[in-house]
Length: 183
Image (cartoon, rainbow, N blue to C red; front, side, top):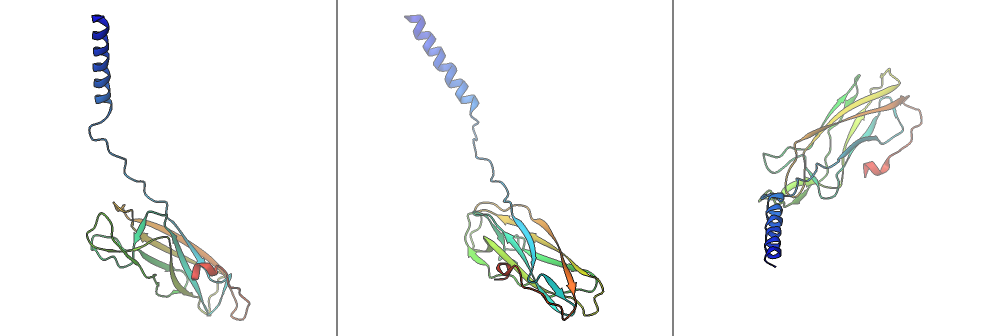
């Protein structure tokens, strides 16, 4: 009987020691993963007429539980969402319009922050000169953004958007497309 009590006690001690050393003292959860933010560009027409503008919308899809800073963050340490448009061959890009941001509070800041959530549309005009010789217009845009969740902000990222649209005569027929991207 003494042997079985000693065996039980020894077994219990070994189990407790194993349990103590197998669980880290600073058991914390892993940091949340960076969101998979998609950035894509759309034209408002299927073709663009020479000498006329066409609307461009850059659509940013932000997963639930995340946000990006607005184009005018309220704290100097936050990276603003921005678009740098690089039109080619004499094309002219207009001023980018940004949507109205949300003002929200988060755990990592004592002040409200100016952010975007969900789907964001950044819009501008692209004008093709009347003497444009090519059959297609190409546009490059670089979107810079910083994503965050309720607790932490991730390093800023650049997203490149390359767009191409056929160019037709000033009197040729064009059709509106992608209306959802311009609401």
